[in-house]
Length: 148
Image 1 (cartoon, rainbow, N blue to C red):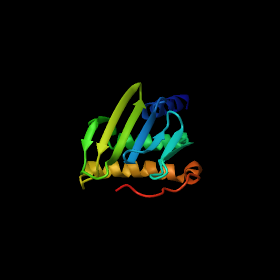
Image 2: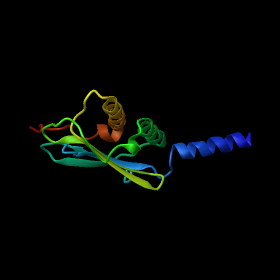
Image 3: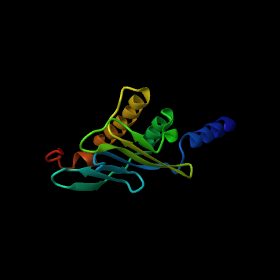
Image 4: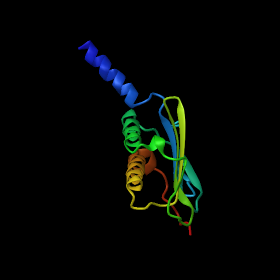
């Protein structure tokens, strides 16, 4: 029994590194920012600037996101990915810390129907859904205006 528990415990630490944190910037001009290092979220309000609030992910949510990243092999993506050109400038940026390493990914533009793009969309959509499910996010003011 002790052997089984120690094997499960070891495999869990290999699956989810204790130092896992990331910043996730997305949207027009990358102005929406989740920062798990600091426990903050910045929402782009467009005409009204930006607002930052405290927003922390649970360990369960962080584990879910890390697993998604591993499942799509995100840690082996190129640092710069050129998607379909869009105006205004938009995309997704990650700065990820895990296992004593740092990985930066800058995905510029929108997606094609390639498998890699679909997997990336699923992961980023899940992260955004987690953010938007938080009470701290729901209390933020609505966006005013749009980028043209």
